[in-house]
Amino acid sequence: MYNITRDYIRLGNSRSGQKIQRVRFIVSHDTGNPGSTAYNNWSHFNNNQPSASAHTFIDDKYILEMIPLNEKAWHVQYNKPIDNRMFGDDANDAAIGVELCWGGKINFQEAYKRYVWYHAYLCKTFNLDPRKHIVAHQTLDPERRSDPINALKRHGITWEKFINDVVYHFQWESKPKVLGVSKGDLTVRIQKGDKGEMVKLIHFFLASLGYTQTKHVEIDEYQDFTVDAVRRFQEDQKLRKPTPGVVDFETFSAFAKVLHVYYKDRL
Ligand SMILES: [Zn+2]
Image (cartoon, rainbow, N blue to C red):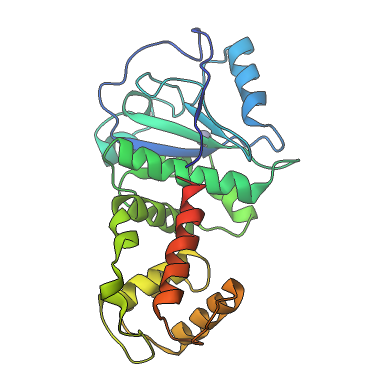
């Protein structure tokens, strides 16, 4: 789990203290200011108090909530109609605004992982659906804004991939039971030609770790690409008694262990 730093700026133009009645969606932004860190932004908003703001700024070190999530921030212009059409309310009154910091010395991968994780965390916290309730600022204000799609694109990430990545973390958080699979369930080896939920779970593991692609998650048949990905995973894990391309208990345990670590340092 990542730490969330709650360090609120003082009240003023950027932070009115007005309350949000109910969080209905999330607006994803980027700062559009290469190299400016979360705390650089904190200082700017705290000291200069511009009449624009967002709740949370994320860089490679901090997930920094600078406005409490039960208060309004000013991150989408009120006269824009698309938020009302999509969500029945103005973003400032009903959405959390999340800013990605990038460029300069900011390590994009680290910042991106935190940005993805935090969106999943917000969805869980406010009972939102990552596929329905996350919107890019660009979508709400296409004439003036291209964030965060432009910043993501610079690093080879499409909006669809971003949402898929959020869905991963969200699903994982919603199903911690996958780690509780008992030994008895795994006396049979899972290998090429097998079908079913266990195969889907293995595809989920492989995709979560980057051995296969997101689109493979829904496939319930153990195919050649599965064999190949499992073999690469086993090699990387340096298993004691490897069964190349076949998931036995040792391999499954390695998935569970790695994913636990993998997720634990994120969740
Ligand atoms: Zn924006």
